Length: 318
Ligand code: MTE
Image (cartoon, rainbow, N blue to C red; front, side, top):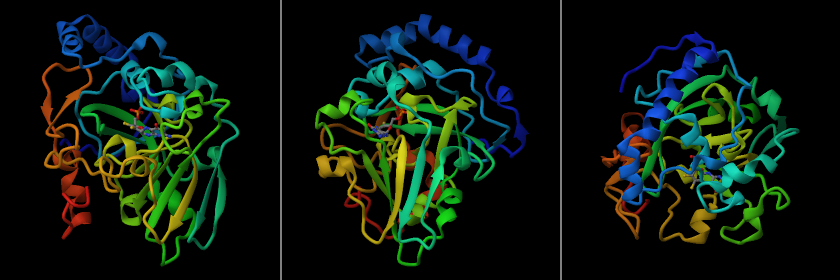
């Protein structure tokens, strides 16, 4: 992985729109895309992309944690989404998420803390310098993308409330409004969507509160206005549209573990050695590519995070 050095950059310097538009057009017309579709790889349905464009966030600081891999284009990232509150089809979030009002928006941070707080999203944007973090996202469904997120270290946000010594875990609870979210009228998951991390995972420098992507405010379908990103875990750990963060002394029960604990464990670290009960996790398809690539343990972030799990049997604690 190429290590980049932090430097202030304007959002427009990050990834010129022309570059990724050209790349997208190439991918659309290429036989690679057609081949993947023929193989049932399920290329993104771009017909309904309604991503917010134009409102830039910045200035941004480049992160030494960014990968230098080729980015997925804006349309792929915003049209091939998982956000079950808007429906279970990959194209549903892009079709319906514009209904979600993202202002006013507050996040309450509570539980085992000295100073519980309810923070307005516009104040959260000022908690720490905004960074561009280009991360691989590996979904449990064995596909992956490379996304230029904009965010702040989650630790900067969590420190605002001064966690108590007894806090061991952090629970993330997300927005629920059946009027805005047609998918919640069906009980596919136990709403609201809940995820959890161990405190040291939540405070790890790689973990971010993401507030945008491609230098712009977060598109609704990707979890506006604030979502979790934990790049060494399967994508479902990264809860979208967070409204409450709670410090606890007990392992939080996530919506996925609650729905099927045999298939979705608490840790959910990307691990090619541990199959999902219904499919292998050895390989993944990078969206836009034809040949599957090998999945890397901890999604390739092992140097930074493997020590968090020293002494743990990761087949048992999957
Ligand atoms: N957060 C909420 N609130 N609801 C969801 O359905 N899906 C998860 C995660 N966060 C989900 C969520 C899953 S399964 C994945 S793979 C990622 O979001 C997808 O993020 P993306 O659509 O931005 O790629």
